[in-house]
Length: 198
Image 1 (cartoon, helix red, strand yellow):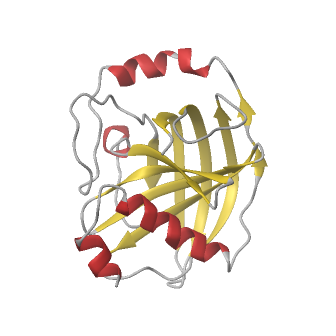
Image 2 (cartoon, rainbow, N blue to C red; image 1 turned 180 degrees about the horizontal axis):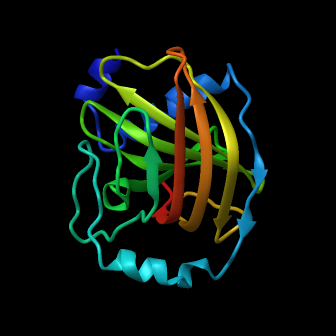
């Protein structure tokens, strides 16, 4: 089923699959929720002018639109499934946002290569948020990992959003993943991002 889903993916299929996978894991573990900061002037940060000069990174299933400017300047590091040794390759991701269950905004910072995807999700509801990495492949979904949040900080430009709104934000987090292979994997992400909510 998962293999079929990836091979027949529409433009939004990878982020949605990641959301479904992570939400399925939430039934087995308790996410850490913290209060998000709100900065109505964050869109004026110089980081977004830098993103305006860069082309968007597209996942394989997406239609590349060359007029779209870069959505993510987040450097995401993991010592698990992929080896990111410098900040340039760590920034090979994009930002997409969706409403899940009508009341939870899910911000996906990651990328899909046609056979899977990796990155992290930020869930935002009632001015609170949680952060959780993900990794999916067409071979299958790894064991349900448990994440131990060391720290997480999120700043957004508004306390509430609706579909069609622009979103600007900054994330800084670090966590450790414990999975069925008894490995402890470090994940961290830091930087600015923006997108339009679908």
